[in-house]
Image (cartoon, rainbow, N blue to C red; front, side, top):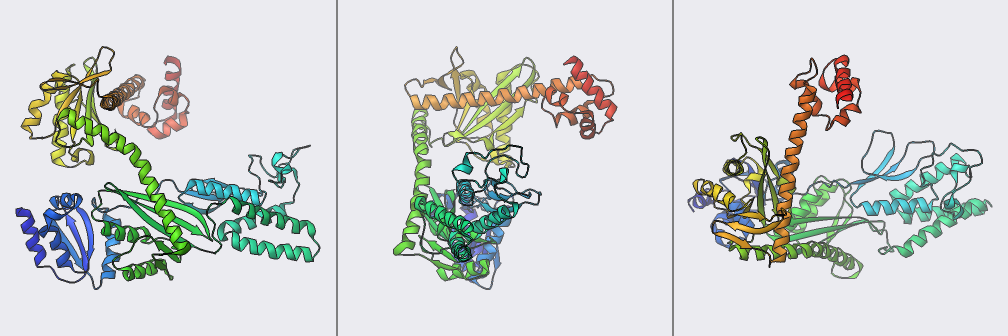
Length: 607
């Protein structure tokens, strides 16, 4: 409470002007960035009303050692600065909009007879790329559609190389390909079809259909009926697509439709992207432990459009903002053109926001079907072990050794009942040079606890709700004093195996706890024990494999440990090295080609 009073007193002398405040932890790292119309009132509220804050705000405030601030001339300037600082510092307690790894592009290849395909990355191949798009399914659907409408080839046949007596494939006969591989169409006509297909992708079907109707009429007037029929067939193909298109508006709407829903402590935003009256893409974002619904809505909208290209002229929301004028001004400035932001209450636009809302609900419901099942199991485990909290964050440890050498330990993490591989960690045993599982486990737990108090690793900085050791009562007894000495107040138990190496019971300082009658708990603990065993054994085997490979290579005259290490950084096995060549090995290891060839010869002769 002394810290709260100190921070409150500091906040009481702040200016009442607009600005941005930056909350910092004891390492002077920025953990939260916020904006305020009145800096003094906003910052004081964190420390004056601590007991009434939600859990995430309380946790954030508990970690605040100091705060800084930047005064601005207006609330609008504070909003823009807040977005910039969040992007720059990525504070722990702000919602962070991470870039999607699933972007897709529409590629028009750079060939005499170009093809339109879907790809994941732009390459330096002089091809034309349209995108990026988030929804891979939508992009694939669009490419299939455009290839079908314009009768473009989708096969792997290299176009332009016509074999003697080459017959067209089935797609040609069902009028889904113009047969360019069999010279059923001239290059100029094919390139014109590609050009029109690209316009269709970029401008949408409404503009394309109008253009095609004009071209069809022009061809008919010139009595070029064959060309007129082609345009007619394309128009009919587009109309056929519209009949199967679930969402198609009879208007040229370009808009983002944004809605959110909440479930438990999570919020899901969905953005439906409309282009020329049709859904072209969809994005969704899920955030946990939100600091406050109003803050999150504002932070999400501002962060999503900060320095974003191609902001549409219309944005439809299913939620109000406290200061709609401020965010309208912000979006207009980011877009560099007029943006109409509104919350429709009736009509077709209201139907669109409802559709986005239903999508967000469905996403959360699907997540929580699994979550509720796992949460029920975790509650059973809490009751069985008489824990204070539901063990949402579980760490499990195992030791593996090969005689008196290659002794290793490992930690796996289960978050909300599922593996959280980002926080897995490995340990090389440093203080033990003989087989002693108890002493090795003591070392691993001691190092883990020390890293928690150092706070220099995200994985070790999290205080687990439960620690599980792969072992029985002996393992539990061996580490008990470490928890007491280091004042590490976390419940810990052992996982006991039967004669077939399967999980049998839970071991505590007071004896064993049976889990045979708790099917869900039994399955979860078996999964955890199998995972930590797999991870530890894999780590040991990889170390042993590297050691043996390194030892083998150093037996060659003139090859030392440094050279062996360089080679091992690039190859995972003897086979990989043998399949390489002396020039490449010489380059990566910085050795002569002759010595590299000696290494290859040795491996081929001896291994």
